[in-house]
Length: 319
Image (cartoon, rainbow, N blue to C red):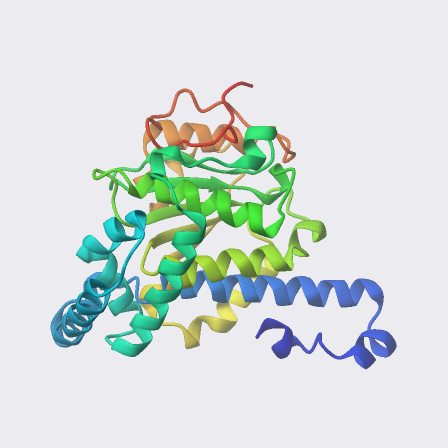
């Protein structure tokens, strides 16, 4: 959609009317728009409480009952059987499809197939092959739970050695799955995206971006509680303003722009979304922003309460 809107699919225009740098800028803007639409899609109807109350409650409940009857007749892998035995998981698909049973069934079927292919072991035994080989491969790891019990995950594309699509999706999905395997962890998560050091190289990771957003939208509906965009590029603010009239207020409220100075005290920041972070998380984020945005350059996390939430060696343990 981003490419279509901005007209970057026109070879003639790209070759004859737009300079190479201009064309790259269009691609970057298109990618950011695609990313943003994907982010809002993952949060859409994450108005879970609203969609399962009032007039929509009955429709969602009927849809969930239909999903229960459907999965009862399936020969499920053990991991998927446990997943479907938790009624809240089925309800998320019902809400995501606004009570449309056929749509919810198709989405759930796709999700179960994906889970059977990629999450075939107990979440506690999940690993990231890339990070086992090199701990700096990915930069997507838990900072522990916030004051609302949500898993807070920090991500930075410039701080990862590789952003290859399949590996990135596996790392991210397994990180989140491990968190949700603990009963005390809230069903939604908080995503802190650090844009410091973000460059054209990162913006051109189109395949990875699409794969990540597709996975979050199709396989993990109603899970994203909030996404904090730390020091996003100016163009992203423009795109946010442009799509705001077409996205419901509840969804837009989950996409939060945070402008921070390097070394700024997060605890005293005016943005209320930062106030749900634990003091140790606030201190870590303040310090992280002062580090050079390259792979392996982050403060250690041993001062954070991440017990049971880290499955890979990708999180920084030492300076």
